[in-house]
Length: 507
Ligand code: GLN
Image (cartoon, rainbow, N blue to C red; front, side, top):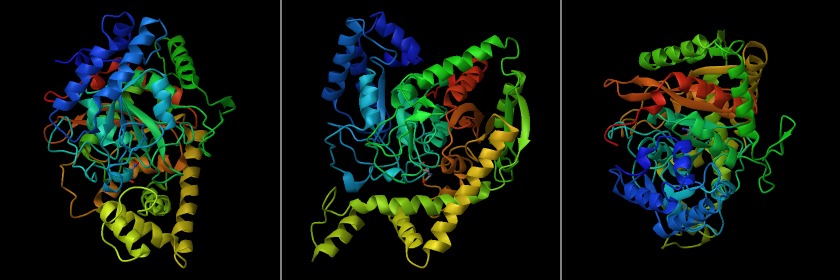
């Protein structure tokens, strides 16, 4: 039993730290040991005791001087896509196996300034491309609920670390579902806010028009201070938003909106969600959805109805088109973003080569894994002369139509959208080895939200699979900048259910 495992919320641990019942340094030492001894050695890609303990000592100093905030001394860890000074940043790729950044990503420095203590870097799919954390060059990560299964991806290490109780929060990134899907598979909560809310500065780029960071934690309540600290305008990122619906994109915004929504629910009395229209997209409940997932999600929606909300059937007619649109646009952007790994400026350089072109091509062939190479090839192809109009431009048109579907539904029919995160529970490691496209299809419910740049979250809502022990997630999607209300809604649900409090037995 570690000290950390005695605390089930950031609030409870924060109280213990502020009352000095526990020191941040002791806690960090203990947490580092637990992380090292954890049965799956692939969850963390880099741990450095000295760096962590220095942060813990700074947290203790803040706690001693009464300057502590809600996150001071709280152990977290970062997806290895966020660059960090000191710790290596590899994007789980051989290409960056020894890369150490000279600066911290904005998200990392924001969380640091909020007093969190980082235990290190968490595994993910290589360059965030994947759905199972199997595309890591450093070995697959297992699901804490079943060691033979994937934790999801690409933020698989983040979800596994939270589910296993190694940290109370973790950063993730979501380009097409990578915060929501692993959260669902591992039975934790995760949120991807509106595109532009969190700075992308220092996040290794995959598909820039889609990439958005988000936190993973046990509960919606725990996500609030994490998301709040991560958010905010950053002049270093040209797509960072200065304002959200007319209000500044600044620290405190999420917390404020969350508190306001909670207040409104409390004032509504017995039927706290009265007036809330939940749109349930018909296209999310078709033959591809496993019955166990469908049943759990439907029961969760009924729990919201019992709290006063109204269920409305809606249609997102272009749902199926999200897959081809995403798998043209994301690889296109990736092929451009990843051109910087040329063996000169960053990362791996081949040892043997004949000339400059040969050096670049060998360095890239050796440094990138199969899935990354596949996407670079697809991306380069769809951007090439003669195919650009047929594929890339067409995908952009489809993207616009998908955005319109969501906008129309959220303007006319409903206030939030609810449905499954994934069609099934977590599959076995290695299952889709011979069919790389199979995983792409599993992204069907998350991709549209990313293409539209809308806020989306995943919260645990039940268990399924043959054993009945594999977590299932409920997806909640809101209007632009509505993340405070999404979190308050999720919190309401978590007050009347205990799925989020269940923890894997043998983690
Ligand atoms: N599974 C999707 C992909 O492979 C999403 C990944 C992500 O969101 N980073 O691209």
